[in-house]
Image (cartoon, helix red, strand yellow):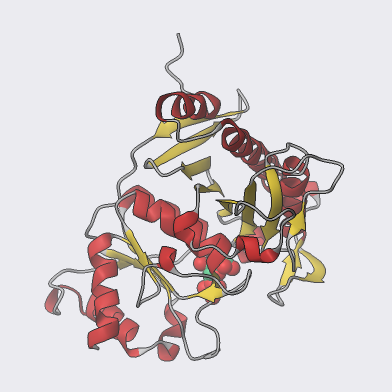
Length: 335
Ligand code: P6P
């Protein structure tokens, strides 16, 4: 008797035991996982699949889209639009929301995603990933609009990512802790490989793009400077640094062994609160991190408490080991 627990079995048991996952949400999560398997196949083909390089188009962020950005977006739309569990979708790669066409039944959930985060790493064979967030459509009004999506991250009913690295691993929370599933390519299914993931409250590893140092605000400069002083400095210990420039990969490392990730506001674009997007990058990652015992703020408040005003708004992100995040956040009122 195989001791392997598939994603399907895990979700059925979560539905049966805890009632945490209504059947429509379970169906949605299984469809998203299946779409991630398809994206993983496309990513793994690389040059052999003719999927590398740019698509010569730009997204709403004004960023040149990679071919795989568009492929991944299309895979997620096509996989999810017909199932009857969704009312609409929103994506980093689409200017406005995608309402489920009338030819399909509409459901009660809203799905948001960054279909392929870390695109700058695609052509150099470094880990990338899909990030997703699930909200419930507000009761009442018929139809669905962008305003229905503008809910704080604390309202998410499911969140996760799939990292396409040496392994393809799906990481998921529905509010009862964090579970990790590794793709068994021989069986073609995700298998539970870790549950009740916990982030150590302390760490010696920080992740930030150091090339932006001269642009940071004082609290972040102060924090990183203390880390760089090492054991001789006020922290009394040496720190290590990692920066993969792929949020999914950096967050996966932090969920696996602890650490702190910072993409703070900087004065290169002072009118933008940060680089990363609130709705489909920071919110799902923040919920996962909190569910694993970590913390996530924008330097001044809990990210999950932020009420969005626009679909693609950006945010400053400080997340990971609880005590480090609290230290940096504290510097935002004292430094
Ligand atoms: P930089 C990828 O483009 C991304 O949105 C995140 O995945 C990543 O953490 C960040 O941007 C990297 O930004 O400025 O270091 O290239």
